[in-house]
Length: 160
Image (cartoon, rainbow, N blue to C red; front, side):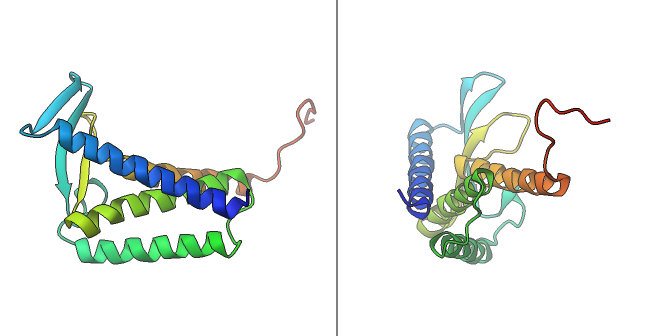
């Protein structure tokens, strides 16, 4: 299968998983503010986020919607034009970034806010799309660090 198609299909599947997770969490939280899954560790907590990561830029839904459209469009263009990275880590990063941006974009377009629900009690409430965005950025940073470090010596060789 063409890598471009595989990347887009994987992104689409992750967007569906994000939306299903949000739908299930909304259903579980009907009439509740929070639900302890593992008391003191993992809770489901409904938060309508009109801002960005960790609630920054509150009320900036239009700006963040336009940013999401731009980022998603650029990533789709890179993938479809064959300009996506050749290495696996770069491709994984792009898939995660596209799926995360699109998952939250769906919320912004349909509901006017992003639905966050994963609550570890010691960290701001987030969702699966947020996790994909953070992991995608982390993968890009790791990829750049590897590039800056240069090629590794073959295993079994010793430096003097």
